[in-house]
Length: 172
Ligand code: 2AM
Image (cartoon, rainbow, N blue to C red; front, side):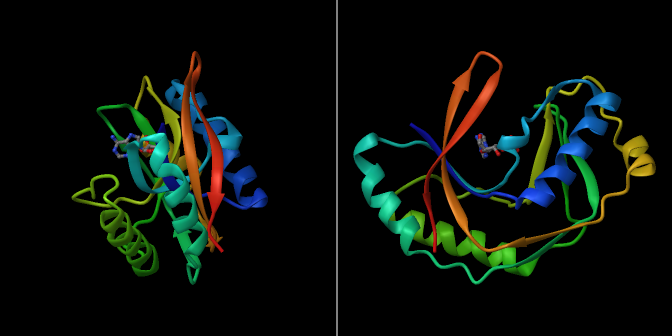
């Protein structure tokens, strides 16, 4: 099963992100992320054997992130997959520490492969037809604060119209 660890936005922020996703799709085309799927990935584990799941669920339940406030203030894109996202202009030390600490634990469990860099982002569109990031910055400057605390372990299912996610566990 394909798993990842993420932060899920509180409802009011999810609504704001959904509005930005609508604007992005109007400008750039492509496939808009469903509101329920909006998230910040902290660790992508890839395929994990079902036999490892109970230990992983227990480990996630034992995590107790201190939490923080992530400032989202830019549009961005990953050209190759054609993703349009929102994120921060500057490094967020609390998110960096959370991500690094999670990878220390995941490596000890022998799960996943730590990425060489971490660019916190919330994907709003996939397979964009036009990367109109400049016009989006001009039309809708991003200025959002994400008050985060709880982690979620999510399973990704591939469906005909894209991926769907299901929460399997939460941290404290
Ligand atoms: P994305 O939003 O930038 O596409 C579930 O698929 C989550 O894991 C998505 O947020 C996705 O990031 C991320 N993801 C998918 N495949 C990945 C990979 N090979 N390496 C790192 N992250 C990946």
